Image (cartoon, rainbow, N blue to C red):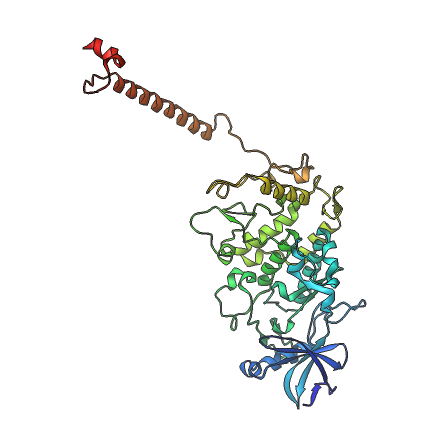
Length: 445
């Protein structure tokens, strides 16, 4: 086998690092610091545009496609096309030290534990680190969008995060890119439904031109999971009619866990008041408004700016320094979550059907929801005002209806008592009871 790059540099293969549906990833002995993604021959035959795609990507790289001064790599972007006896076989890209990074979903869930000694830093990764990671993910997304690239297959396994909150995006060769020299557009043909924007569900991805707004749907999900302890915006407790719809159906309808509709957060989810209004408003634009109008979704640059502001305004919990949250809160939402979880474990078993279908807590003036009595902060600053109770207002239509119901119930009860009394005093002589037990009946006879 005679392998070389388009520039004529010889390629000497080391050992295999990974293998997938499209091909294999091989560590290179020469040139060092690179890997070769070699496609299976059937993949090249199946997609005749693959070679032109990779040639366009290597000739027109976006900003930050190489390693920075610290050695960090934001994009695993193709560097050179590889050929075997001048026949296209794959491409070279910089080697990524995966031992120093983990996939996004491993950090989004605070209960995740290290799998190796090298991953010990995961346990020290605070909410403040997750906010910074979300901002860096937004920055990487904005970099690609500025270059006219759409990520397309924007799933959590293609996102790796380091202990210093830096982000690396993988599988760049599947992204939707254009060749500036010819104008040819190379589409993204793959994706995961749970991260696919509603407007693309059911579409033929091999023929569909994706818009950057479709990436912004997946970006909002990733940010939500990083900030909300691994929770998913379209999963929760369903209180609507019938069976709970699939998450893709909920996304198409703009129904999400904090949208005030029939989908409510799971009981042990972190309280909504963890996040300032600015962040919640961005989520609302992404999941509610964006379901009807994709261009309403916040841009990656908007997310980055808001998250940078949030990251600069956090503090630690006096009781548990590992707990980090927005400085505007006067109580720790993570302690609240732990207290609610403990209370739920100590509570007696609920009756069948009880609790699950209870109506959602009423929203406050800020749009936040009542976190519940357990562990609730005793005082909030004005920007994080406590949810107000929704009691009956005297003279309101609701109170009038309740008064009529009480009155009618009382009348019905009196009628039943009178009816029972008449039955007891009737002259039913057919009874076989002893006469000493019915003196009134004897006297009337």
